[in-house]
Length: 278
Image (cartoon, rainbow, N blue to C red; front, side, top):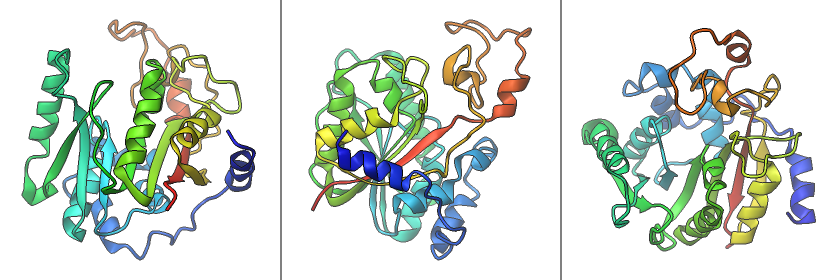
């Protein structure tokens, strides 16, 4: 990480958005409160601060937004209706169908996601783009924002993937476009070598983004959780919402005492905004 980025991180580490920072975007407020959102995702808003986080990243009407590996669709349920309402475009990265080695599970997962968000009356037209270790670029300088939430630790388990992902994001963003990052934060303790516990050092993320050509624009403590001690028996997945209580995919252990982990809540997370220079 460059000296300038270290200084910027120090300067902006305590940024918090004013309560009215997102108040003028009525469409964003409506999307967060929207009827298409599931009860389970609504219940997580207290930990994920969707309106404040999206406002910090700079989400605006008429943007083309690509979300990387949206998982259960927490952000999809907000961003797809928002794009529909404001004349924007929402695209989700999905399993790479051009990869001959793609597993049946990955193919089924992509099909399930596509089916879940196929109702254009609710979600508008949700675009899909291949993404994976062997995928082609996401596109050429066409997006206003790329969002990656809680994915970077996975890419550290496949070392070339982090560099490939950052290069793909840089290529698809327009000059001045934003790379929006949310990730489980290892700081202040050192990051485990390959982040197998799910926690990543802020310096790792910044260095990878800068290597691709991005500039760190701002950091926010919106999603900080000082109660997270980051020393859990099953890594970050010990905490909600995963609430893991056994190793290696084994059935939940009914004797595992969850109380202190549930009391912590969701993880401590960095929230970063990078910009592709003009």
